[in-house]
Amino acid sequence: MFVITVKFVIHEEFIEKFKQRILQQARDSLELEKECHEFDVCHDPNDVTVVFLYETYTDKDAFDVHLNSEHYKNFNEEVTPWVKEKIVTQLVKQEL
Image (cartoon, rainbow, N blue to C red):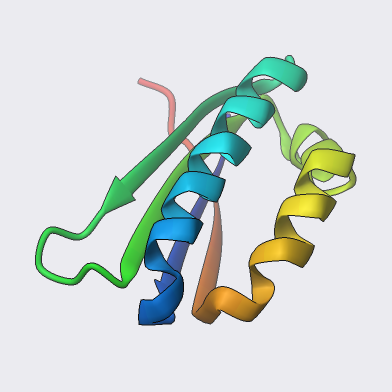
């Protein structure tokens, strides 16, 4: 399983807009991409500007499909001005 984590730091004036938009992006990814298995949206209880994503895909190719999807491109274009910092990590999940 291919894992992506993303830590966003959002400009304070866009926090509520971003929270709504990232939830829509999570729903779109899960509904429209058969090889997107998880898309968890997490919030830091001590810092409202921090949003953390945990996503799993069948493999790297499935993640590439995600990056090239219209819903991702639209999301990314819309939220980029709202984002102060974005850290993306790619991992491979160790099976038990």
